[in-house]
Length: 429
Image (cartoon, rainbow, N blue to C red; front, top):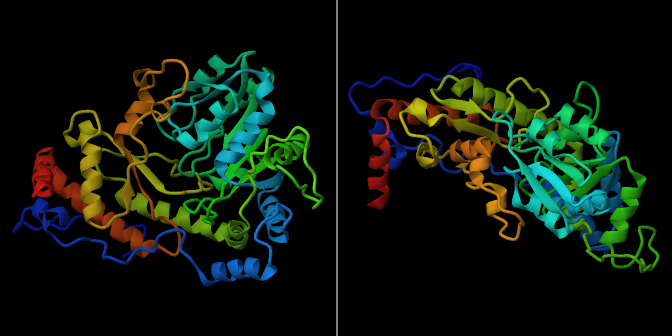
């Protein structure tokens, strides 16, 4: 079968489609062990770890492996100076700490990762939440601009699931009002490159993650990318408690001693991945394109990415459903059922979050209500994602995923919402 052909559900008048579902005792589509899960360890990663052991030095920000990785990432991305830190969250914290004197508020999206928003509080600032767009889960431009003012230090723009969030109007408005622009590209490493009409993002700082679930798949690791030399120097001032990048034993008089130093072992693995990063991203994109072409005709299924974006980083494969198109009421019931059924077929699907970010962070000041962010609530109720989209998985695995989607949708089209009751009864027994 061509990888771009649509998979058609098999017609079998002799059996009820729902009884073929794996959850109800049928054979699962994706065989156990067929999927290679990210970070897909390779021998070269063991070689990288051995290199650290052989060096006799397991730490230091000026370790040759760390500084070499920083330079390699800077070369790959272009445009930016790079500093490695302990995590993507640490990178956001340091960037916010650098600009916090501009105002006491940070504008950001209500649909966000708690680790991205927590640093706002750690910097002594207050979040100002706005809704997201329904297609790419990016920050709402118009709502953001309305919140900009003299009391706003920064806008934190989060690029989720590998999406590229350009929001040019919000960026230009921020520039005009002296609001710093910080991009959380932890889930979208490709956004560090010149992919926006041939240019890099207009940003004061980009925060990137090397976490094992991300593109660099290295463990606990983060990066700040910026053109601001002052911010690069600020990384060391707030991150180190002692010792400079040049090796001298120095105690900075204004150090905050966060100790956000990069892990050398994680840096070694990340450095290996940088060399193959373009190839990795292309496989992810090809897999995403293949899968979407095979399932895009399913009723009520919508992409949470731009299928026409050739520069999407495709950290995972995010979609949402329209419950009403499947015969369900609005809310998470239909999504939860589909995730349950697809999981039983062996498809690696997950629900990301189920609440706006402020409900995960009880110490956030002010009274924020989920009902004030309708797009956020709709996406949280209806989205899920396929996680294993990275190499070495290829089109054959995508075809298995697609077969499972069609199998589940065929049963749902036959039985409708009653399938939820059938599945619940099976789960109880």
